[in-house]
Length: 467
Figure 1: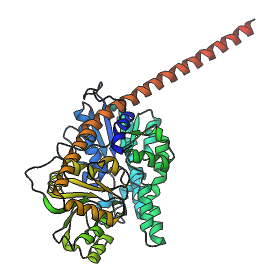
Figure 2: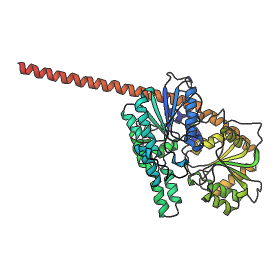
Figure 3: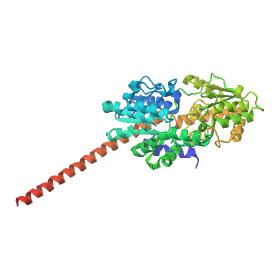
Figure 4: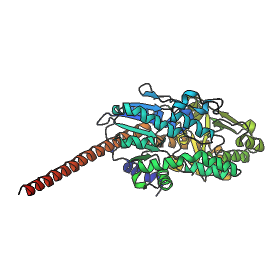
């Protein structure tokens, strides 16, 4: 059975909401979304919060986002509650960023100390701060929905009786293993292990939370394996794409030799290395070939060195910090969008390109085949020759590029848009609240029965003494 044939059943099992259900929820909820750093340009987690919050508002809910810096770009109808941190990635020197006032806060001090010693503490310290805030304001919300912070504070909130759900996009254990494999020596491996030490906390939180949701079948299986939680106890609701913003732009002419990708330059997981090698294989036969990378090139990094080795410097352009509108323009100019990742828990860039009507080539890394399906070309992850062949086949066939563009757009509209995701989450939240209410009623009944038994026993004892 193909992946596409599985999709309808998968979606139905992820949430019992029927396809004919009303787009408005049966009950409007007060929802609080959490993100420890949530600006869309930081990565996929920021994009997830931006569009999910907007879609939930449009589904009839009241939504606030609690975020650490850099703060999200939200729809005006969504409330933003800022939870300041030291934001050590934005300062000139994290070594000198600590101030005397920060010593009064364990969260501030620990965040600084962890960074100083090569660790990453933001998820932990963020959820500590959130617990403090929600200790005074948690009664304002029906449900708390975390976006892969997965800090210990979520367990504290759950113990306080607040319904908590967490989205896990994919287990970061994959990122750690790839980083370890790419480390040149034991010192780098030691630093890598220290940086990813927060994974121990995430595993405990994933096992301890009642409600975990993920974004693909691939991630569901990977989370179960990495964090020792049954796959049957992990719900699935696919990511969405903003199909109104990411839409075909007929007035923009596509450049027949423009390839586009979205990749952090020096993250091995994103597979940019293999796309550059494929470019080098094709360049002699296609001298006009150019690559636009949405990402920041690290000066002196491995990607910069590779560009020099392959003599591709003039053919590759990097852009970062661009607006959503500019991103759509880039997708509309590209002849082909490529997602060469070794692993993706979902693959938002591929979905965005498809929504814009751009022909897509993706690797088979992680969940990418679930998203692309038969609406694009799929090659083996890490295979530069297969990638070059796929690129060549589409460069030579503009009609096929148009066909894939149309198929991709329709696939996103049918299965991967935020309206669908918001409708499914609405039902998911209501199911959680109903289960919580049933649990409270059951516990009250058990307590009442215990009290009655105790009173009966005391009465019998009194009668026996009197007799």
